[in-house]
Length: 133
Image 1: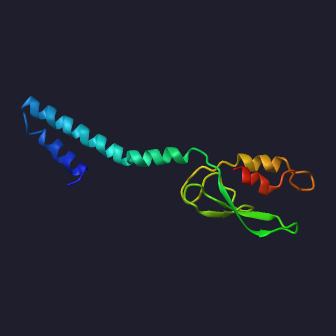
Image 2: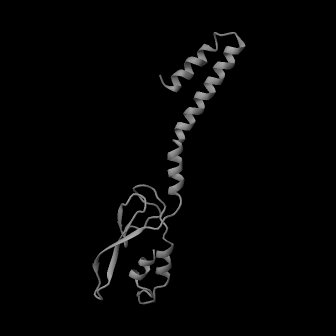
Image 3: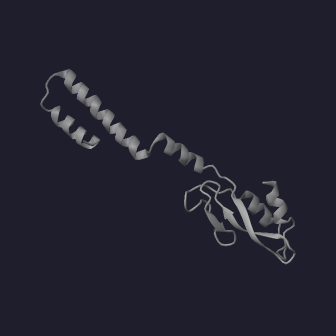
């Protein structure tokens, strides 16, 4: 039996019981079942905690698999700190991970982009930057 079915049965029974205590008891039971339905619609406490945690921006990890003409490692993949899904640095610019919804903290990446010179060279090397994180 579902909560909805129980509510319907209890609501129908209140029509036939004339004792005040029965009506009060059924009313309390109906109210409790309706509250349970609302909480289930929201999710469990653990699901709520996970959702709140995913709203806190986290820095992605980076991964490189090649070298530029100066012999420096090129970081071409960012990795979600929550689900470890991999994305292309130059193409996949999301505020939240598409797979798990984790908010991504791009503050350091944005800082690096703002420090580029007009000809596109970075003032700080990416490899040094990512060693700090």
